[in-house]
Length: 434
Ligand SMILES: Cc1ncc(COP(=O)(O)O)c(C=O)c1O
Ligand SMILES: NCC(=O)CCC(=O)O
Image 1 (cartoon, helix red, strand yellow):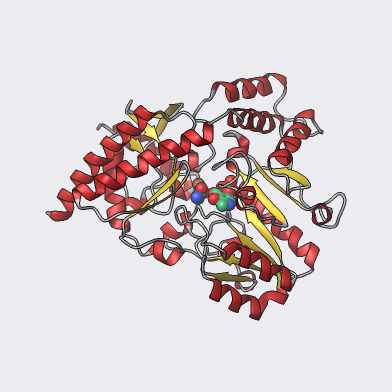
Image 2: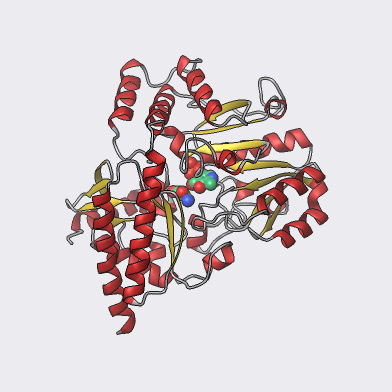
């Protein structure tokens, strides 16, 4: 595969953009280095890079592209936004329509507010929880990524983990001291931490289904315990549904799990590919937010017509009968095909999957917390990533991320992917055995 143009453009990028990328996750440092693939265009389930190579895409831009690239219904909505004014700085009908749609899909939220990224959404839920409880500490689970605001860059998995700097420089110790981090799926550690700190905790921040050290579901009863003890101690529960909302079904993980957080952060899918975030929750808590209450949050771009119209269009596509069932069917097929191929080539592999989201871990252990994900073989993952790319499959360059299916992937794409994986495993086991 010729990647010359990617290499030239990346080299030029490094001269002008710090690290050559606009988000560290996009670099190939965690997969053995080299120039990241520079993509030229995308349509449906496919990418074409600047050298003309075609890929089946499972990155889905780290989750948002659930209806595939350049979906015609979303393209039409964005075109309409461009033609009628991209940014008003005034209320619009679109934001009201979209807020109603979100609330219908996630009925446990009484009120919402739109922002521009998942980072902003989570950051604000914390501020609101602190304002409401008049407490400062927060509790989070190790390896869960909640964006790059100061408080949540402590023991953050995903991108920061691949850099080996889980605690970012520039985050003062005084802030890190406000964060209590505990292992996911560990009831004893949670009980202990709640016993010790619970009365000082403003909120417990949870990815109800983890997406940032791979896809990891909560063990039976774990989230219920998280809710119960938080309520006992007067701490709020904040669900970070930036990845999970509208990924597994039409609505949030909270509705699938039958649990009610006090506040919810949203992002990714709800923007249909444009920048977005949102947060929402119980009326009484949301009334802390300005202009009604003392917790300030604002945004020049917040609720902009383009993101609203793209988000509405994306949810309209997701309302199509059977789309989630089909992603689950194809996800199952993909997982089974990959596992069979791993077995055939003697590759040690464990998979975690929910619907159309799948993570491959190079280990024979079950992965249900960050420590276990961290212990999986990153070097083998890096080799596999490069082989897969060469064989026409694009996934995230990190062992902590998921493969995301979209409504545009077909059974033929899955078959082609399984063949590419098979070829990659064959080549991988040859290198490992040589
Ligand atoms: C669970 C979760 N929360 C928050 C974020 C931050 O969102 P953004 O990158 O839009 O700021 C991410 C993703 O990157 C995420 O996966
Ligand atoms: N799961 C982690 C991400 O989605 C991060 C994307 C980014 O920061 O570029």
